[in-house]
Length: 520
Image 1 (cartoon, rainbow, N blue to C red):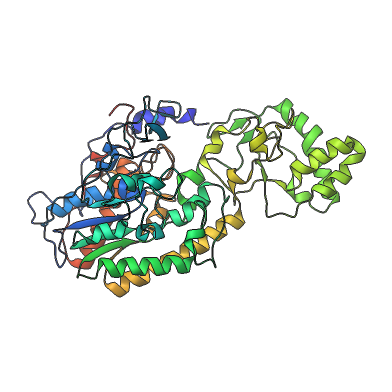
Image 2 (tube, rainbow, N blue to C red; image 1 turned 30 degrees about the vertical axis):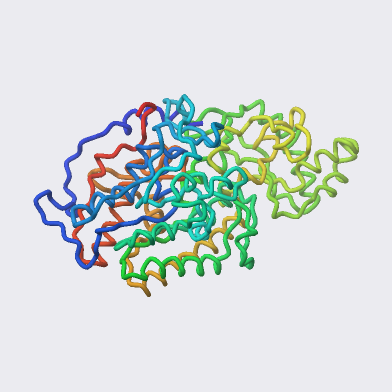
């Protein structure tokens, strides 16, 4: 799918030393002042972004390049103290629990696509490391996890009741993330949380539950959307605690998931007659003719008879064609399709077709196909993946072409809308509380919108959200690249300067690569 990106990567991976003409970078001789902020004891709370997660894993280099670590170095120029991070054991990434691998190693780009670095993880979750730690970013954490006692209890990791990353550095088995922050008496804090309150739902293709209306997060699943009222209550309580001793801080809102490469890289219409590049999947003229005659044509006719003809159209040889997907929001026409097709196919085969295509349609630009699908298109569904309890036979055994991609593969518009509503509600809470408490505020929603449209220029680079070559995101399609984290840090610095009158300098983005190499 991305072989055509190889030549671009060879250019963009190099660390280019550019002339810096940006007016907002403070010279080495300038005096850096904190303004009304006090950076002596800085603590950072959040999720994987604060932790420095990148390329699908947590590893030393990534942690050292997290936006909060970059910020902490800038804070030192204005009286900031030491900033301690709970470093992992290696640069491979991944986790062990009792010697068993529970998280794999990080990804790197091998010139063709992302692959995992070789070797096994060495970071053992059950080996607690001694803090206190200033960086309290916990990969996978949702808002309510930061106040949950036992979230760092190693005994609960195997069952999913606790977080393996927090279990390594929580002060006690019953500690909370906010509690471990407060015992350090912070004078300044950063809080960027809430992304995971919708992200699990999004990355699973909406295979979760929208828990709006359910005020008990103890009943939520990992892929569920957090009720906005729960988020508001938790967020307000956290900020009240963090500011209770007069600490100042910076908070950030949340971007829409639709701006992340994880949801924008795989096109909805990659099926072509020939190789066109840009992620196309060549089907071939003869195959298109056969598919139209044997599958798409009969389905189109049957659905038209059922007043649902817009679900399927014939494949074209001249333009890119959409993927075949299942849309669980559609009326299920399985029984009706079976009845219509029985005369031509017989009752058994007609029932099979009805089961497969009862909620099938072709994708549109409003559908978000998740990143892992780039390696799924055209492959044969297993009995588990098919949702039928059996592997479909040929010719109905090519995902996205002759067999619909399933719920986990695509965010349909109804699911996107649920995520947008929740995200908007969370963002109202964040901005309202930031204003009420006099905190610096970073509008990451606007930043991501810009990255995913026209791009952002800094230090001679134009950064975008384009997968692999855009410079902003790592190979997992969700978490920033080294340069992406530096860009975030610069926006946080700017917001702090604006709010508190400090003069924190921005870092030179040219000093940060867009991807990590295989060997670190």
